[in-house]
Each structure stands twice: as C-alpha cells, then as structure tokens.
Amino acid sequence: MPPAASPADPGGEAVARPDEVGAGPPSAPPPVAAPLPPGAPGGAEAPLASRLTWLIALRLAVLTVFLVVTAAVYLRGFTPGGFSSIVALVTVAAAYGVSGIYAVFLRMQRALRGIARAQLVTDQITWTALVYITGGATSGATSLYGLTCLTGAILLGVPGAIVAAASGAAAYLLLCAALGLHLLGVPPDQPSGAYATQWGELRYPMFVNLLAIVVVTLLASYLAERLRTTGGRLVQATARAEQAERLAALGRLAAGLAHEIRNPLGSIAGSIELLRTGGTLSDEDRKLCEIIERETARLNDLVGDMLDLSRPRVPALEVVDLAATARDVVVLAGRSGRGGDVEVRFDGPPSAPVTADAAQMRQVVWNLVRNAIQASSAGAVVTVRLWRDAGAWLLEIRDQGRGIPAGARDRLFDAFFTTRTHGMGIGLAVVKRILDDHGFAIEVDSREGEGTAFRVRVPAGPLAAGEPERRADAAAGAQLAPRSRPAG
Image (cartoon, rainbow, N blue to C red; front, side, top):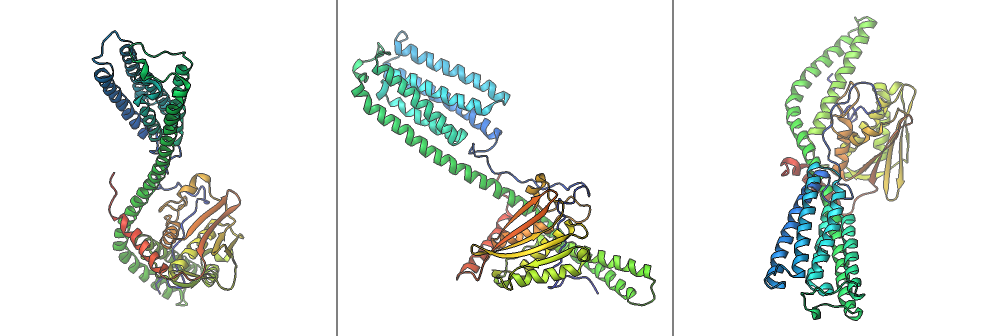
C-alpha cells in the first residue's frame, strides 16, 4: 500500500537540527535582515554616511542664506570693515573649511559617528557666533540650536539629540554669562540697546531659549525612537515578505512535482509490500524490502512537508485537546522510525483545551518530536511536557542531544537550513509558519552538550466571541500580503 500520510500520522520529516554537527556542510540560509541598532534610526554606516552628506550640504546652504540675510538686513549693506561683518565672514569661512575637512573624512568612511558628533558640536559653536552678532541672548538666530538638536536625532538617534542639546545649551549659557559679566562687549557696530547685558534682562531670554532647546530635544528624541522602531519592523517585514515570495515559488514547483513523485512512490511501496508478504523471500531480501519501504515513506513525508510549507492554508479554528494530541503523537513516535532506540515520554494533564487547527497543531507536535528524536543518540530520552502557565498552555519538547551552536540559532526556523546530509531543513520552517498563522509563540532553549528544548505557548481555553474570525482574517492577510514585492 502506498505510504500516504494519514491523519494519525502527520508525516513531515522534521528538519535536521544543527545539533548534527559534522554531518555535512550547511545549506545557504536565506538572508534575514537584522533589526536596526538602538543608536541610529536609519541603521548601518552606509545610511549614516548619506545623512552626513546631506547635513554638510544643509549646513552650507544655511550659512550661505544667513550670510546673505545678514548682509542685507542686519549689516545694512554689509560694510566690509565692520566688526560684525568680519565676525560673520570669519565664521562662515571657518564653517566652510571645517565642512571640507568633514567631507574628506566622510569619503574615507572612517569614524562616521565621531564625525557626526563633532559636526553637531561645531554647528552649535557656529550658531553661537552668529547669535552674538545678531542680538545676543535675544537674537532670533537662537532657533538654530533647536535645528541642530533635530539634526542630531536624525543622525544618531537619542544620543545625538542629547549631544546637540548639551553643546548648544553650554555655548548659549557661556555667551550669556560673558555678556552678563561684561567679559564680552556688545559689537561696536551694533546698537547697544538691542543687547541684554544685565542679569535682570538676561533671565527671561535664557529661560525661554533653554526651555526651547529642551522641548525640541525631547520631541526629536521621541520621533527618532519611533523612527528607529518602525524602521526595524519594516526591515524585518521586508525580509519576511521576500522569504515568503521564495516559498511561493517553491510552492508552484512543488505542486507540479508532487503528483509525478507520489505516483511512482505508491507503485514502489505497493510492489515491495506484495513481495515482502509473498512468503518466498529470504531474510536478507526481507530486510532489503523493509529498507525500501522505510525510505519511500521518508521520501513521501518529505514531499508532504514541501507541500505543507509551500501551500499554506488559513487555520480552521476549533476547540482542540492539546494534551490528547501530544499523547497520540508520543505513541505514534514510539512506533515509527527511531522510536525503538529513543524513548519518548509524555508528562502532562489529562486534558488541555485550546482553540486551534487540529491537523496543524498535530503537525507542529509531530515535527518537533521527530526533530528531537533525530537529534538524540540511541538510549536517549525525549520528554514532551505540558503545563499551565499564566493563562496559557506551555508545550515543551526536550531532547538530550548535542545542543544547537549559538551561531545557528538565528537561522533555526529558516527554510532549507540544515547541517545534515539527509533532509532538506523544512520541518521547523513548517512549525514556525503554522504557529505564526495561529499567533502562537515558540522559543528555543539550547545548551551545547546538554540538549535542546522547544517551548510553544498556546492561549488556554476557547477564544472570546469573534476572536477565531479575527485570527483567521489576520492569517489570511499575512499569507496574501507577500505576493507583491515591496519597493526597494
């Protein structure tokens, strides 16, 4: 009889875990983008270099506009010999020169974060010089301090905003202190009445401008953190969409090949069964027939796993006894494959009602148990535990294998990732997809040389009214969304 998978046998050869080190070279995993680091809203060094380039261009544009406005309005024609004219020219020239130095370092792609911090501090010093010649503590140019705080948040996130705010506040306070202590006089070509030089006059503009710097810094930091979080989620969602698109291509291929593969498999299995039960074979021939039957069944399971992975379906939610499902899988695992030399035990309550797709949850438990058996050596024990924890059922499958290397854990649920010569690395990918469709969580606890435990958290009891429909709609949307590649 053909080895088609039945409801009692979810089939699906579990993925070979990285426990099997040395069994063969690992297949190349699909690229998975990492979430953005906490220090930068945009990510790695390349985006930072791009933003630094824009910052240099923006600074030069602001300085040029400021020079023109100062010449036309504040300096009344920009007389070349005036004190303010000289300060403005020297400040703008120095800023242009420093920008050129930064541009050289930027082309070398070295110490970009240090360059960014230096630019923020330099900008605040530059704005302080311009504030001095345009009214001092009451100058309208103090708004440029807040602009630099916003720039710092865009460049480096919250740390950048703090650097800009601290340097801007320090420079402004030093200017006000110098004016109040008469260490710095009013520019000789500026009207003295336009400057606050007494502490009574300085208090209010100092309070307002420092408050503005703090408020802008807080708002910019909040927006930068939101941008970092959203950007990280977008990168991860794009990676998941690309992986789903690859799986969709596999599905189209698998659907075409499954029929052509399974038909001859059924014929081979049926013919071998007839030969084995014919009663005319020697013991050696019977063993060969058993090997053929076992390998055809394994190949049939592999084809089934490929179809399960590549043709996802929306879970048909109903009340399922997770404890009964786990017990059935434990009994089945003890009768199949390596169940004779690896003991599988169940430890759990008599009943554990959950809301899930019965067939898919059976597939999850089967794949995890079979995966644990494959990772175990002869005489080892695989334990399936189920217990209640804070409104949920925790299902744990623990083996006594060699554990999973730290470098392989991030790719554990990637399709086609395996370190064994047999199997294609599909079983755990199927598990992850099914659990994601249900909204359930899975975690891995592994120590090299001590074994591995997979824990699945499933909400306990029937769901509230409308929740099954919401989950089904969410799962359907998740399966349909990746069909179009995101821009970029």
